[in-house]
Length: 254
Image 1 (cartoon, rainbow, N blue to C red):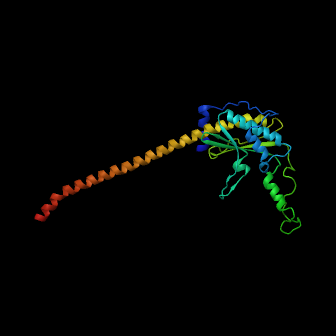
Image 2 (cartoon, rainbow, N blue to C red):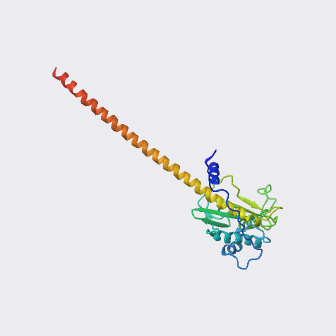
Image 3 (tube, rainbow, N blue to C red):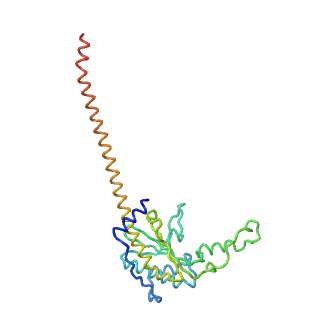
């Protein structure tokens, strides 16, 4: 069994499942949380249609309010460095909303199925606007065209990402609108998942700390044992030299 899976099962036995508490998601909001307003206004990061943007904004508002109610900090996602050292934004890497819970960071991506990321899509459409579809270079390629939300499905989905992804492999990380429920109704499950990931990460980090301490102790004891053996061998060698000295003197006198 891997450390990732065993660490969670052990942590789960210690504390049980986190509470599935209600998360209010009102259909009307008098004053949006600043993170919800930033989400709404940052059009180039939108991955929801213009039709569902008001609903998506309410969901971001509900998540931000609930996160702060639990004592966590929340902020709108911003650009960060990618694997090539360049600063940019992507939904997977940065999300639309970030939550900090002590030493653990989470980011949440909110999308609508069938919708492109607005900023990059519209840039691609402008780039290929005057390119002929009959060009030999693009004949076998579908060039971007039309609105970013032309194929919007009306179904929202949410992804949860976290810094300790190596610990949380295999856990649920996606929720979406379905015939039996709406995404708003799955928000309690999102927060329960965050709570359980905090416990899992804390437990795994503590186990790593204990393992590292044991390894350091074992290494220190091994060094001490080598030094002890060296001193024993040196003492034995000195005794042999002392015992051999008289016989050597007699041999020279004879």
